[in-house]
Image (tube, rainbow, N blue to C red; front, top):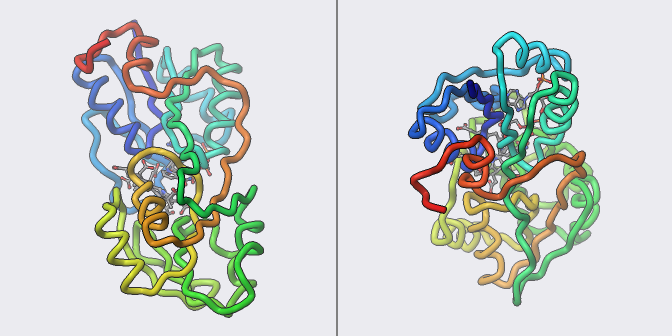
Length: 248
Ligand code: 3Y8
Ligand code: NAP
């Protein structure tokens, strides 16, 4: 009897949850507890960490989970690594629902960097208006470049003082091309820092940057261990042994 655990927290995970609920598959949706009011899901939902690899393996056994779907984010590297290790330990099948990275298009002016420290180092010396579209958790390295006027975008209002002066937009996305163009023009943004998240929910800023001829410092994805991967909800449903109303 199938009982699936969805490691969620992304738009793709929400689409998968809807399909799993429609198919009547027994499943649990899991959030890490990063935001104050995560979106409701049509499945029983748990919020918060499992307690590392052993905590997740214990959860899988205790909850009689038969399939794990890692539908987290390409930058949720610790969760994804833990899922590979815990499923190996528990002998439970695992698949990752992972969207393809964005690829450079004609007219894009990308400076690709391996991590957020390299991204901060890639900014120019001369003061500029910089849009940091990388969330809240990893902005500290930009404190070393205080000459810039920063715009940040968070899901929730900041709780602690920021490591540098910045203007914070509070918005959870997904974002629209029109909205990104207005924001960048109004603020005179000259540089954008982004992660190569892929998917549709965050790509509007990349399209807006291309239209405005702005440089994007693009942080590449962390390396993840080998695991079975799917790029569509349909593939995941087939892996679970269920046909979907999405066709195919
Ligand atoms: C808690 C669930 C939906 C899901 C929306 C997607 C799209 C919008 C784009 C920018 C980039 C960023 C950030 C982002 C996007 C979607 C999707 C996506 C980027 C929610 C959500 C949770 C989180 C966690 C949050 C992180 C932060 C990252 C903001 C819900 C809304 C920057 C990633 O304050 C914090 O601690 C926030 C932390 C991890 C990265 C960071 O380090 O700050 N996402 N985002 C999930 C959990 O608790 O398990 O609250 O409902 C989900 C979404 N975020 O319903 O359509 O699917 O990718 N999320 C990045 O790309 O760099 C925003 O501003 O342009
Ligand atoms: P992370 O750094 O990879 O994970 C850190 C720890 O948070 C994990 O070891 C785990 O704690 C807990 N955790 C993370 N995701 C979880 C989940 N879905 N369910 C239960 N516990 C979870 O994670 P992150 O990058 O902060 O991402 C956190 C959440 O935000 C994920 O759901 C992810 O899908 C979503 N998200 C992240 C990004 C991003 O840019 N990173 C973007 C959009 C959405 P334990 O070790 O205690 O189990």
